[in-house]
Length: 362
Image 1 (cartoon, rainbow, N blue to C red):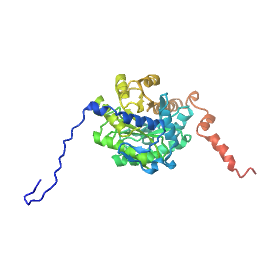
Image 2 (image 1 turned 60 degrees about the vertical axis):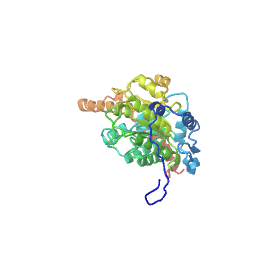
Image 3 (image 1 turned 120 degrees about the vertical axis):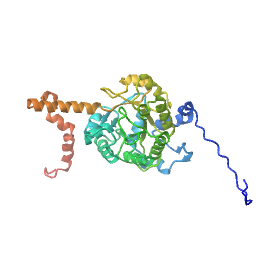
Image 4 (image 1 turned 30 degrees about the vertical axis):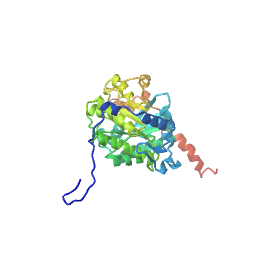
């Protein structure tokens, strides 16, 4: 256009922004499905970042970013067998999970908040406290044993999410679960609230960027939506997890799905991206299904978030009641002292200590 003073200026036409139809957003492009499948199959090879069309930072291909636990988890996710993941709340329960023969474990925020603080899963526990417990958990299990860490809402915005991913990877986690809740977060089977779509996707993109480029090393990103409960909308939950997959998430989870049909609908979103279910016994919103049934639906992982904590609470209350009422607990329900010492690692400790014994003349 030309101003009153005769100065000629360039013109620019701004096209109106039109939101694509919901169906188009939920459907995952074929190239994205192939990219996610290849990432899981190859164990995390990310030579380029197709979300932005630019090369990933050179650190992403260097050997110092390797994470044996993450590589093992990717291999397990690419397999044909559904993974059963009991949830731990401390180092001892993590060690027991591995000793019982499970291939993967999960650190539950609900359980850590209860065990460490005796407080509800309501946004009261901090990133630092969760990362500290996670470090003890990964040190209590064998090198490369995959543990997935609950990271709640990432503890803030997208930049907080990046820091959380970096810390969890450095702590030795194989995977990280991050949700789209608003602070203060809440257990997904209670009354959660969610942030808007843009912020939710930004968190996942930031988490995936840190996975690909950050100094903490590789980690499997599980992106979770609580919008089924927070917004009472299955369609919204499916839209969000499809968007999370397109943003680069390695695996997906929708908490508190209400029926088996909803579980099946979730598994149809973003084909090729592993899906996780959780079985909350005793009154959770999701119907209890066997691992075989969940695998037939299309799930790759089933977590048991409160099973170990619930058993611990029941057993503790029972033995305390016996001491209070009878003066002595029922020994038939307790381990022997030798068994308990073995569980806590005394035999291995003594064997290792002999190597440095300076009193025996060896």
